[in-house]
Amino acid sequence: MWQRNSGQKESDILQNRFTSYLVTAIQRRKWDYINQQNRLQQLEVSTEYSILEDLIHSKKFVYDWTNTLAELENDSLICALKQISGREKHVFLGRVLEEKSFEELAEELGLSYKGAAALYYRSIKKIKDKMKEIVDE
Amino acid sequence: MNFKDLLLQAKAGSDQAITALLEMYQPLLIKNAIIDNGYDEDLHQELCITLLKCINQFNIER
Image (cartoon, rainbow over all chains, first blue to last red; front, side, top):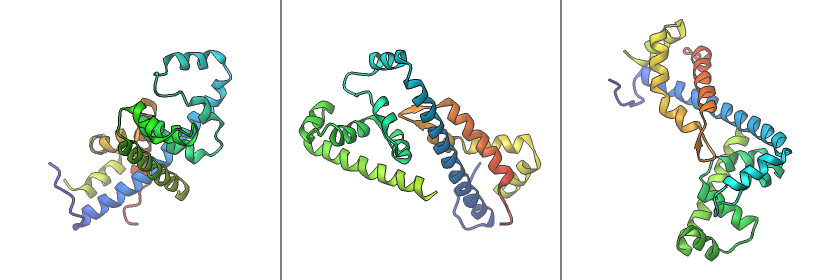
């Protein structure tokens, strides 16, 4: 049906241009959407019940960061944190906020010391990239 | 059919062409509808709407 896009023909060039146009629009929309959700969440935080419920439902080893996140004022950081995986978030926040060592984090996640360190630096890089993406727009 | 014709038809309002484009870009939309490790249906919907807007606003002639 669809041939692989070689970027040579006029139509392929047009498609590539459309795709990148679309990607930018989608990322902006997503960014707005996440901000919107954050605002809503901050309003909801005041109802005690939802906090309790969150605590009950949150898994043992993944700490519930919802309230901590609500206190952050840096929108692009929140946005970036929402887009990385749970393990990456756990390592990043555990190291930065709780000042845990890589040994502790590795044990919690069932990784080796090197694995935890690699995960940490990878998540830092991802967060930086995401934030840059957001700021650039 | 090449992409340019498809886009032109979609711009003209052909349901078939719009559906084809929506299906074509589904993987991209789904990938971007993931926040906090979870698929967000509402966001996916919003992104589909964004795609429709893009079809209308995109300038083919540049």
